[in-house]
Length: 141
Image (cartoon, rainbow, N blue to C red; front, side, top):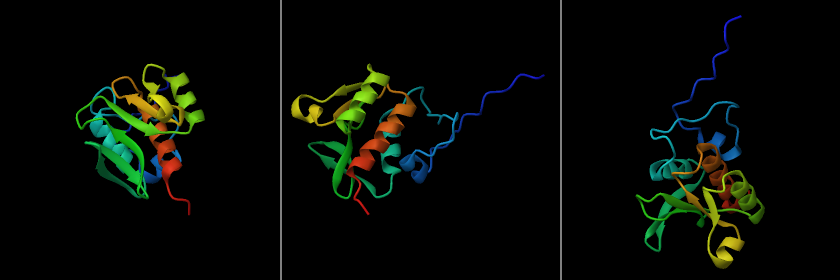
């Protein structure tokens, strides 16, 4: 019997609806131009969600839905960002990738604001946490 080949890596980003709902093909990982996500990948993924727009807040880019911030980049070319999660989701992310996720300082962190180190986060967890952050801030229909 011939060996079973691993599934091919997809070289395109997920559709906005797939990214938003988590309906991403099992076993298929999305390929980034660099080994780990960078600020451009963060921006592209954040803007893929329905109604997402980029604005600026306190001198750095932020991503909003319905006028509410769900994610930010610290500075345009930096290695870190922030996703606004529920505290339970923050715990899950920190358990899964403790080197990549840390709570923001003070009450912001206790409320779910989570710092992301892009050079340490996996593409799977970056996509997952951006999806959670978008869902938390998206207007209810």
